[in-house]
Image (cartoon, rainbow, N blue to C red; front, side, top):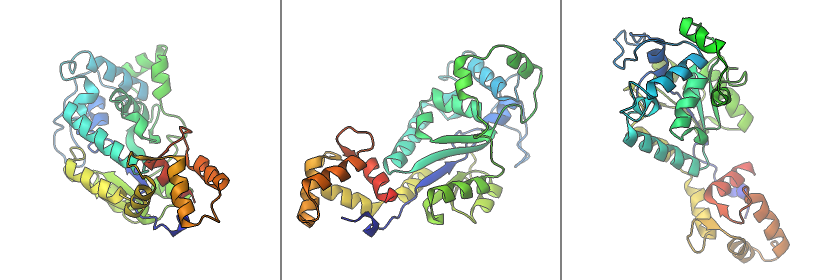
Length: 300
């Protein structure tokens, strides 16, 4: 078997916007006290009472306060801005499905890294993403509430989620996507931006595929279906199933050896089969999961 003989189709990188794309509302603007959407000129429907915040630490503190007060009955601030518990599970299913296809997930937001990471972390969604890019620190200034927050000693949990220089080191989404694609050796068809802002969609369309969340109210089940179709790697899946003789969702050493040695017994000794098995078994659990199989195929 030669991995290079497999057609390496399917999206390998998905870059998600956050506000109005992963979330159903514009979180940054709501926490900052912006009452009008500059894209539409319409009043923002999702209202957050004062005090408002403009910095990472200030918005993270405000999220915690709101989760214990105004939004406690709805399951907390994070669950509310994601459209409720049922939609959180829909988003989780989408992210899980994409990761199972060996697709890397990244967030790129014009909002602040810390609050975005805090919301995703509280919903147990942060681990699906390899990185969250956004603005950091006092990019948008600071009001008295922010200054009071920053004067106090930050909790360890807060410090873990505050954005780093690396996460804030980007100028435009299209440029960041180009940089990521070059570093991973991806073609235009192997990357997609999911975004609600039509201007960002137009800019990115020159470098990658796009999905426009035209409703600006969060990705829907229709968007999820389209993304999963883009990420599906049909030929790789078929090859995996050929090796997975007992259809338990993983390949063990015996199954790998049986197929390879059937293909060419002289080329594949027991030692060589074991060597390639160890290379494919990234998490060292003595089984090759589909995601590991995909990673190995694309790393060759």
